[in-house]
Image (cartoon, rainbow, N blue to C red; front, side):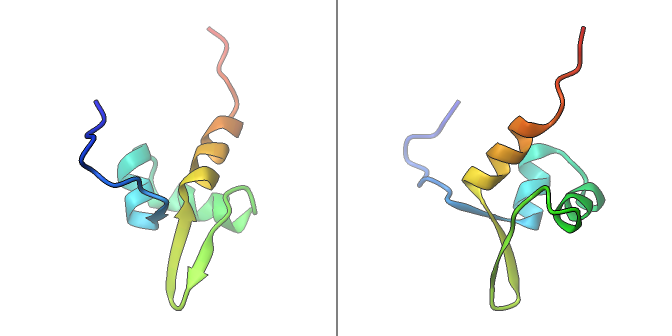
Length: 65
């Protein structure tokens, strides 16, 4: 359930992305290095735009039942 009082999250740190997707840091960094997951840099901080995280998740292969 979405909390209506929580502000819209526009960007995620690597730790945020790991927590939200339940995908390990190693795989996240591997996908970044492969150019499959876009990141932005703000000084030393790396962020993943919410739209880029969702696009990357949507691009993952669908497993046939």
